[in-house]
Length: 316
Image (cartoon, rainbow, N blue to C red; front, side, top):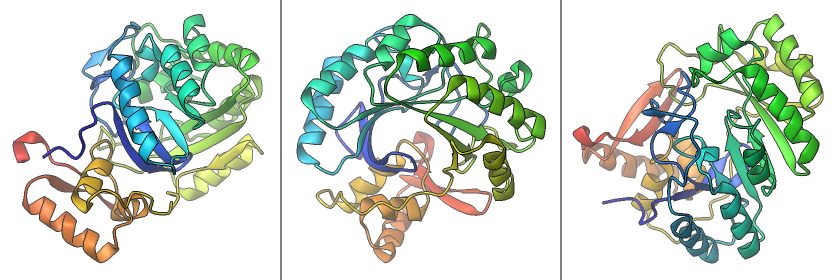
């Protein structure tokens, strides 16, 4: 049984940056311009930079309206999901129509690959928050981390972010995903600081690998390294790795559906699931055990944490 009847939205889920966030996925799995080594969603199957109407926005709007009309506790409507949301050519139209229907702020999480394009900047201008990723200022490190489309250059992305800042009146939260042995050197961080001073984001979010990554060799940096990076970058920077605990606000749905809905998009710890589902830990542990026995869920250990995720079809 599917965890919900929704095709394009998921959650609300507890977000480290956005509180209780209703996720919107407007890109089919797995259309993206990157194939990041740390991605928690999976391997990119369609590596592309072509913008097109990938899913019908009327259907997306209907699902969002249905959910938000019954859930008054959502903090943000967040475009993220299975790939890069700016690949959808009608993103701007969709955000504008959402803003006419609801007062809930809209956020877009983007890998920044198309941020230099005028049409993408126009689309993003309608969002309340844009959270672009920039993990390195150097092409070699950048490509090792993101394994991006061959036409992408980090210098072009940086200039695009600078240009977007000049025209965009909303909040820009720049995310740096720090990876052990790749972009955690003093030279990398100081180069990033110089670029950040040119981009002028409102915030810089320092993150590291928490959920199981695409490549098993990828590992997180230490808390001390994150703190060191924060000190180098300065006042704009904050460490966002610790999961925020949001109050339970989804009591209208049964336990199994809530659990499956939370983990269908990303692996989650039992603490993550409890924070957003409102299910007591003892009951939650029992439900997860039964779902594992039924072949619907599996456990995955990453570093010192146990994550729960939807079992692949062949295991179900």
